[in-house]
Length: 351
Image 1: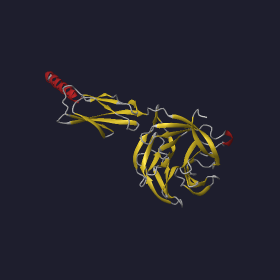
Image 2: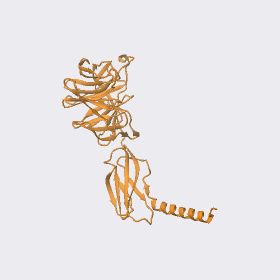
Image 3: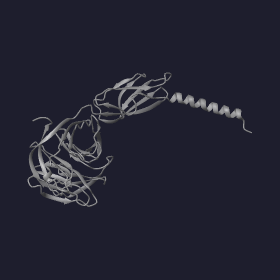
């Protein structure tokens, strides 16, 4: 026979323990709210929701694992964001009550507080471009272009003459790889592949393959450029990765945002005077990005650069940016474009 009084007593005691445990475990953030969006540079009020009866000896605050403040009480503090990178930032609080430490976390999103300047272009010179070249990487070095071209079965790596658009040296890439961005690093060429999670290293003179390297956390291989110390890699998202220039390992990244939100499908890259220039896939826009925090500072509208009369059935999208650092010349082209252009960038609305 069941002892109902005993059962009720057990239930009552269990409920009391649960309620007592809940009071001890109510610890979280009063401010900010989960996923709340702020403009870069805006102060974020950070305040914990700690029961009044709870003892606090110390609270350590961290952003993405890096200490930013500490307090010996429950007071709020103002998190300064001007020196942070854009995107999701993880705020942690380690609360020490003298007997144990509890950690609580919350995410905020930082987007750019700057409206990008709007630029357009002026064509200064026009050169021929191979219409079989599905351009993925483009750089200018000592009077010629380094160009990598994609598509399965027809990917290539080549040195190209400026005046003729013809390949001076060229190798075909194994048909199982879809070649992507490439960049010259010293006497070596580093080239990405799209979905194969592998990069290739070549001798810059002979185009002989020297080695390979694996991707780490980046999703895919899209664009690649070099800032003199680090390789800069896009992966088709709004994230840009920074790779060690010697061993090609991913060391850090930025997330790219404008004042409206994240900017996705960043493609071919070029590093010019301290900024990252990025083609935005399937558009005629180039984003000019601050590599320190991911802010889009400018948009360049390249609409109409290839006249209709110069388009063919296989002509694809704008892709390919190359900078002649010595001559201060900027070149752009596209996938299977019949032309390559030297351009000058000018603010929209200027004469």
